[in-house]
Length: 281
Image (cartoon, rainbow, N blue to C red; front, side):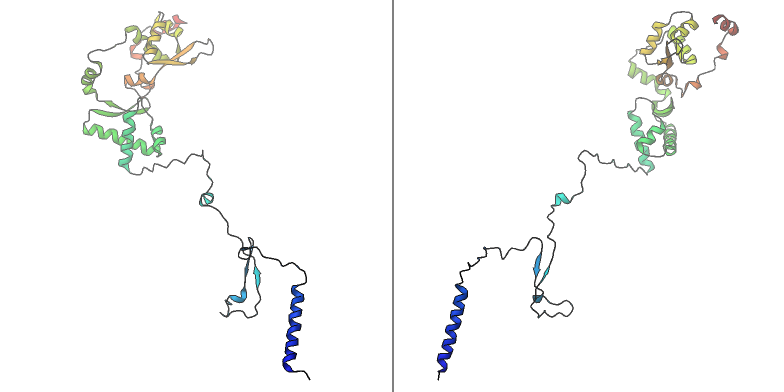
């Protein structure tokens, strides 16, 4: 008869021997590198659903199973990379002026007219101010009428197809004294005659001018050109001679808007003008 204590002891020895055989089977023990177990896979995350509450019942799962759920890794994009791509050399669009107030429009027109050196057209002012041409033209008329009614020493006048500020004629003596300091430059009779021929016959060549006046006018033409009263206007197709015409300064000096406002020559022509014309032919 075997004592119960011995039977238990034998079973324990057999169990220990079985364990020893497993441990001493010669297989090398694999060591897990330190820190690998704590590192999460880059492309997925293991979520133990057994440890998470069921969203439908609020109870934890009891089957002890773990499900592998693929979760995309967070995108590492810096704030600078997230900004929209803009070309470095692309200019920023100019902001619209947005002139809507009549007072602001009036002030802008007056500021521009103070710095212009020649008459400026209302369509050019409309393009600069980004406003309709009709509104700019009406504003210019209102400004001109306001200066006249207020009795200012200057006026806004439409000259040579544009607008420009001028002093009033009644104060011309004071302005001349200040600007010219008692000195005045006048055109000679020959220069006035040549300028009149060009004004009424433009564009005209120097040969035609000399034929009308009966004398050589090369020197006078050079003088008028240097004064800015006439300018070259291309060449004549038949002869290749230079053509001359009056300038905007000429219109300003005479106070005209265009050459169409020149006075009619008929009252100043001689009675035998037809005979003179036939003689030129």
